Each structure stands twice: as structure tokens, then as C-alpha cells.
Amino acid sequence: MNPLIESGVLTEKQSGINFMYILNDSKDFLITEYKVLQSQSDMNFVRCMKLLYNGKIALYYEVNSYRTLQDLLPNLDSNSFMNIVSSLLRTVIEVKNNGFLSCQNIDLSFDKIFVNVSNLKVSLVYIPVQRHTYTDYTAFETQLRTRLIETIHQNPSLQSPSTVSLERNLSDSTLTLTALAGYVRGGEPVQSREVSAQEDTAVNAQQMRLIALHAPIRFELVVDKNEYIIGKKADAVNGVISFNGAISRVHCKIIHNEFGFRIEDMGSANGTYVNRQKLTAHKAVPIKNGDIVRLANSDFQVLIR
Image (cartoon, rainbow, N blue to C red; front, side, top):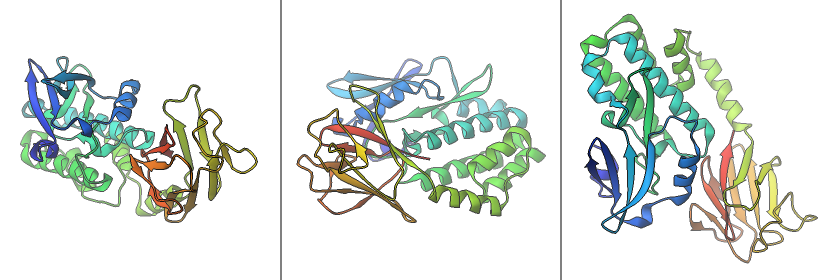
């Protein structure tokens, strides 16, 4: 069962073939992530619509054109299963790399992983709420690996040299999902530990962008310095935001070092927020991929690549 249902955050209700997640507290709803979800048509997500049900926010998912992975498993052979796993891994990697949505809000229950039977492409259920299904990305990926390993074990019809090899690779935490997806897709050799270490080094050198979500024009800032000051006074900052007069002349600062990215409010008049939490002036806090930063009343999505 979804942990958010077990903890009382959501209640599930069937609506014919489709289903709804009803939020027991409407304050948990993340309107920004919902809007991003609506715009991500190129990703494999089940269509989600926001409704009101008995005065509560409900997330309605249209799944009538799919079959669940749970339903398909008894009749799958190893080749079909490998194709589904390939699609699943590619979708998860796209979400992680895209940065606008969080993998921790994906429902990994096998009755909520949907498959198009004509091409075996996977569509996932994304839940735009504050309280994540998984505490962090590591917990999400661990659960994904564990469920795939258990599935291979529990279904004799899936046993083959390729799935046995996949099971072994899934158990190796030093192998990235990208490496696993490459193996599943074409039987390519998985990346060595040395390559994974190089990938880790590359992460530390990543660049951050702040992308405005509700600006009157398309707008983004590229954080290209270890200390990057943001505000509306052009001769005092690195990143100028001129479309919102509520932003201070020197509003905040992004700091980048070997420990990642942090943001610090510079004593702004209208405040700096990270995921709705107001910052204490001159006290830097960490920010990560997918966070929402609010400067005064303007929201920005953090994208780190």
C-alpha cells in the first residue's frame, strides 16, 4: 500500500476503471508541481486532473487505456518483462534529470504502474503533495530496486539468463540507474565503478538554473559563480530580476561549493522562501534539484544539471 494512504495523507477511491486520491488536508496539495505535471506531456505520466470531492481536493487519474503491471505479471515472459523494466527505468531517469518533479512523489506500487499493452511502455502515477511517498531519492531508488528483485524471485515465468543478470546488477548499489537501463535496453555492459566515480565528480561540477514559474515573460537565471547574488539593482548583483518590484535591490545569494548549493537571504524586505519555509536573513540553507524558491512573491524552480 502507498505510504501516504497508510499515514492518512490520502484516501483512495475507485471511479469505474479510473481512480482518485483524495487529500484529507487540502494544504498538502502542491499547486506548482501540479501545474508542472500538466506541462510535462513528453514524460510518461498517467493523466491527472484536480477535482473537488465532498469539499476536499481529489486527484483523478485516467487509466482506462492501460493495464497494471500487477495484472500483467502472471502472463509475462522474461522478454516482455525486460521491455517493461527498460521503459520504467528510462522514465525514472527522465524525471530525475529533468529536475522539475521529484521521484519521491512517484507511486511505485505495482497496481499503480500502468502499461500500454500494445508497446509495453510504462506510465507512472505522480502525486503532487507536500509529504513525499519516500523520504528521499535514495529511499525511492532502493524501493524500486528491491521490488524488481522480488518480482524476478517470485515469478518463475520471468526466470532467464537476462533477468538473473538484471537481478545481480540491481543488487549492486554502485551501478547507476543509467547503467542498468543501458544493460536492460540492449544487453550492454554495465558501467564500472570507476565510471560511476567519474559521474559523481561530474555532479559536483553541475550548474544550477532558477526558472521562473509564473513570470509575465519566460525568465531564468544561470548560476555560474560560486557566490551568485540576485536582486533588481543591476550594478550590485550577478542575476538581475526586473519584472517584480517586490524583489529587493540585493535580495539573496546562491553559494556553491563541494557540499552542493545553498541559498542565503540578504536581508530582503519581502523575504526568501524554500519550499514555503521562510529563511532567516543571512543564514544559508541547502537547496536541491526540484526545490521551489520564492523571492518575495515570485516562484522559481531549481534545476541542477
